Image 1 (cartoon, rainbow, N blue to C red):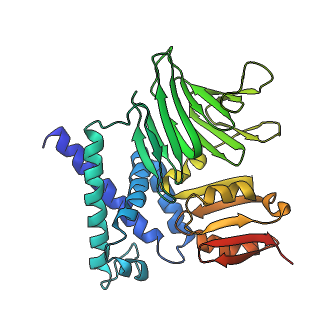
Image 2: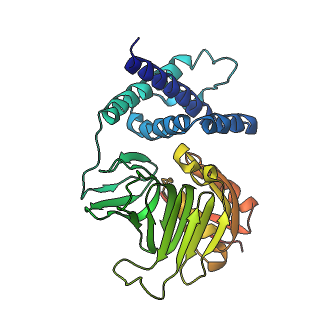
Length: 332
């Protein structure tokens, strides 16, 4: 068998595993040990994470298929329920076919053109390749534009979250401009989340320099510059002193596999991130609610379950405002 066929076969097998995991995790009341086993599988290889993220994203393209019985059936590791087995196989087949087409297009070397503006929908991650070969994973409801010159590579992350794996080009820095500041790197991997005047930058590999200041503002003086190394994170909130800390890069980038992880974050920041994956818009009423500190894990497909459980953790209530909007407010 040729090397190309070997690679294709391994890729297909990995996608099948990812699809099976995706189906099992959508079952109601998934035991903690199953979730832990899934996380170990994701952590075992970067390709596993990428396969799972692609399966989850591509599922939205297959939602029109008659696969409702998969969500209602019972799926277990030791043996598949015979009643839902045909539907599970059909789900995996649909997802693998879609992913195979996507992978072949990616293998052909398709890249985002200079000057392109890219935006993702709520709940849909997307992987792109920039003109220089830099790989970017975009989170849900994220907008990015590309502007390259011979001197520098610049992208504008106007909103949302993205993970960058930057191709090294000494003498031609890679710059990400956000509404709150810019991040400069040469060859590194880092994650950026920007929302509501808050900028979070975490480095997985290499180093970055962050300069605070809105686009078009002179950043040569009276601006804060923070340098981060691998395993470090910096948080910049409007009018606050930057906060740096050690961070596990796998926690920060868990969103690429459909899991949102937060460690001691203000609830308003958590809600801003969750809203990029929730069909129901979540709003906060009352400043004290937004300042509550939250640590926990939220599956991107289980936001409603998280909302139901939230009043058990904090002195708040969740009120349905209309069919697609809920309010978080202090409990009376």
